Amino acid sequence: MTNGHDFLSKTLLQAEINRMKHGDEEADNNRPPLDWALIAGEHMGHLMGALRNNDYATIEQEILHISGPLLELHESLLRLKNKE
Image (cartoon, rainbow, N blue to C red; front, side, top):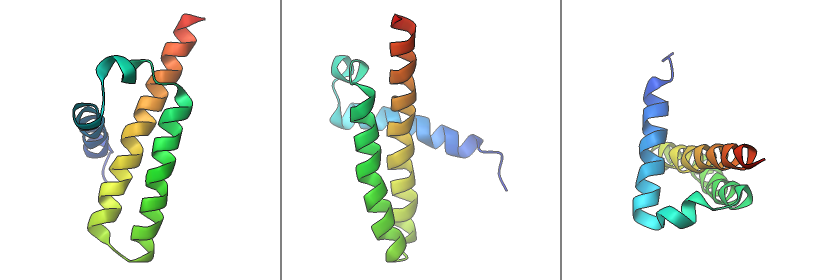
């Protein structure tokens, strides 16, 4: 088993790619936690489909498509907490 550094590095990269490809820095920095959770949830459905089809390349891709928004969700929650 690995120590997780590779997964965390890939998750950080995925979040960066998502922002470059789909986002607007200011909008993403102000996106509410619910938005990030819904994005991750949408990709969870894609992951379930890939698992059902034993599509290992898509499984790996969707895991990162879930972990990137979860990282953003975490950051969004920290921003809200720091505003209190």
